[in-house]
Each structure stands twice: as structure tokens, then as C-alpha cells.
Length: 231
Image (cartoon, rainbow, N blue to C red):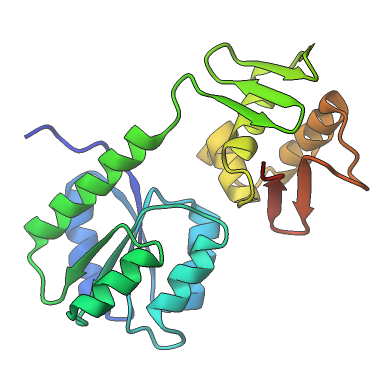
């Protein structure tokens, strides 16, 4: 079997033994693991660490896992694998309809869980746009040529400016947190460098003709991140 590509995995589960068990198994596969023992801590960890998959327990001490999933889906499409003792078909269907990608019932075999997780990570990679073009109002953003047109006229962006614009536009209508943008555009070493992000957002707005006071494309979520106009 081909070795899995290392990924950032967030475990949201209030049972410390299960978190330890999952951490050992996931780290043995080369993954980087973050843990949270409550729903609110999990939502915060998801925003700060930008995982590539989330393993979510439903029976959390402060809020139901369904509510955690709903909160996550307000701003991210990160794949979520639900891990729960609730085994009814109705529960599974409701969670899948609410945005979970898969469901594993406790008690579980680690082999099955790892296989399901590999499937989620493969699906996530396959879903990433390759050579796609996005059209938002009078903007056309082409990933294949790394070019931007506004009302048919070329907008000249640096590599980082284009990467940031593509990240925002490809998540149109969803919140892109500061941590997500910094990690994906500048890398994990720059998670605290929020000044980079502010400077580049200002430059992007100037080049695409967006007004921070009355935006049409890039909307600021104060203290959290940015949201690109949907459609």
C-alpha cells in the first residue's frame, strides 16, 4: 500500500484515552495531530490550525457534535469524519446531510478508521481545482495562467497576491481565517505574521478596485479573517 501523505488532523473528543489512541495511530502514519476536548475548543482549534480533516465525536461536554459541525460549515468545508456511539441510520443520514463526509460507529477498528480517513484525504486532494477559472462579478481569475481580468482588462498581481486572491475567491461566501490564509499563502512559520496579510489585502483591494469602506469583493470579518463575495 502507498504510504499516506502526511496531513494535519484535528481530533475533537472529550475522552482522553480515545484521543491518545488516535494520536498514536495517526502519528504512526506521519500525520500531524491537534486535540480538543470540547466543542468550543474544537471550533477554535480548527480556525487556528487549519486542519485537512477533522475527527468529530458527537457526545461533547459543552455542545452537541451536530452543532459543532454546523458551526464549522459556516466557514469551512474541511472534511469531517464523525466518530460516535450513535449507530442509528437516522443519525448517520442526518449528519451526512448536515455536511459530514463519513461516519464511524464506536467501538471501532483503527484499520477501518484509517482507511476512511485516507478516503477523505484523497477526495479532498481530488476536489482541489486544477487549472480552473473563477468568475465573480466582473473579475475572472484563472488558475492555469495565474492571470486576473477585471472587465476584460488585465490586473497585474505578484505571485503572493495571486495566491491570496485565489484562496479567497475559491472559498467565495465562506470565511477564510487569518491563520488559514497565512499558512496556505506564506507557510506555517508565518502564522503570527498578520501584518503580511493586512498589507497584501490592502494591495489586492487597490489593484482590483475594491474599497475597504464599501467593499464589493473582499469583506473583512474583524479580528477573524476575510470573506470573498459569493457569485
